[in-house]
Length: 195
Image (cartoon, rainbow, N blue to C red):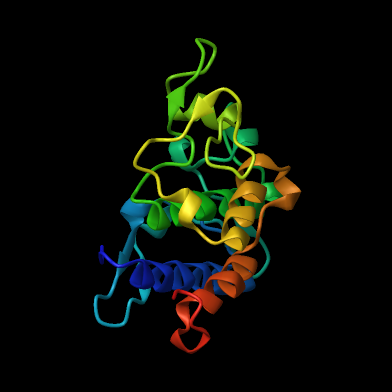
């Protein structure tokens, strides 16, 4: 990945725009994770690989996704065997937010951190299920952030979107369009918001 935050903001914007374009066609990614994403170094455009985990809307039927990765699976599905078709949008919103967080915060997973007591689970899926999000404006009381995290330097509007994605209800999770709109203002040099 590029070293500068400007390029990462542009990548994050392009990813959000790509996910929104897929959603506009009534398809869902479900098994979205960084290993399935690539970008072009010159343009910073993003592409997706290994798309067999998508939920595809056909002409008369939906072809459901049959797989997911637990480190990117929303809390409400951590103990389920599949993502219900009626909630596929919530799953994509969650996994997109996790990837954006990692992209903008040195690869740190939003549910990693240092436990503050023995009741905090050690594995990411259990932390996701328990909403142990240590990087919020109002952080979880059971876990502290990774010391190398740069989350406090992120702009407040971006932090609020992460808080909605990881601490709120599934209905509050920002859409790809909301992420794209917010991030685009930082990606555009003419706005000078990165300064």
